[in-house]
Each structure stands twice: as structure tokens, then as C-alpha cells.
Amino acid sequence: MAGPGAGEPAMEDERSFSDICGGRLALHRRYYSPSCLEFCLSCPRISLRSLTAVTCTVWLAAYGLFTLCENSMILSAAIFITLLGLLGYLHFVKIDHETLLIIDSLGIQMTSSYASGKESTTFIEMGKVKDVIINEAIYMQKVIYYLCILLKDPVEPHGISQVVPIFQSAKPRLDCLIEVYRSCQEILAHQKAASTSP
Image (tube, rainbow, N blue to C red):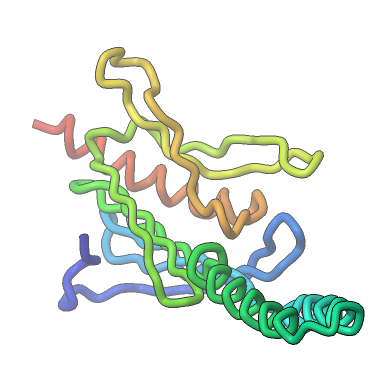
């Protein structure tokens, strides 16, 4: 699903927040209309210091084994494993941006953009959305908060069939979640008002 049409003007703003570990996050908001809003949360870039430290550790360990075994295949394997691990990390783990697009007449689209350029998109129809809430969980021996979408149970009208977390990779703090939550609730209220009006 694509974003709103190119002819529609969009108001934009950007604010800085922190993740649960203290890293810097940038929340970019695009306001298209009262019924359409997009949030893009930019995660911290890869630390060159951490990347260098990991690479040096692997290569020093490989060199130590090479001096003991005198087998050049160990050095070649270390280089190959390092490159393969880096490519795997960039393509499957490291997310640069997480985007939430909510349109009251259609639904909610969540997109994760990886450092390699790969994108993963999930779309939920608005008819399946029961609510958007802030929930809490235990993570690394502390309580954290996360934003999630509650999906309606098709069998039980008042039940919940699934909980879909938002911004799983960025893990923003509560102040950022409240900002997104309030805007989502405004859109959902607009959608409910439109659906109940004759």
C-alpha cells in the first residue's frame, strides 16, 4: 500500500527522543489530513567503534589460532565469517527506520527499513483494529513500555485475537510512545465518528 497522493500537502515536524538504553531517536511526523498521519522513527546508526571492536576481536582470535596451528585456512575463515556476519546483520537485524502510517478509512501500515535497503511491510485493515494502546513488559530485568495494536476477535465481539507490537526495534521511551499514541487515538476517534454517522 502506498502513502497518500503526491498532490496532497503534508505538514511535517521532527522531534528527538531516547530509546530505553539512552540512544538517540528521531521521530519524524507527517500530517496529511485529520484522517491520515505518518510517523517515522529513525534508529541510531551502526557505531563504527563497535564494528571495529568486533572485527578486531574475531581477527585477533583467528590470528591466535593461526599461530598455534599454522593453518592459513583459519585466517581465511575468519575474514569470511566476519563479512558474512556483517551482511547478515545489516540485512536481517539492523533496522534504520520504522514507519507507522495510519489512514482511518483503510488501515494501519507498519514498515521496517533495514540498513541493507530491504523493507518489511505489514498492513492491518481498519475493520480488524480494536484499539491502539500502550502496554508494559519485562525486558532485561526492568519494566518497559511499548505501543501495540489490539486486533478484534472475529468470533467474540468484545475479545482480542492478537496483540501487534509497534516500533519493536527502536524501543522508544514512554514520552515518545505517548506522542504517537495520542495521534493514533485522534485518528481512531475520527474513524469511529465517521463510521457511526448516518
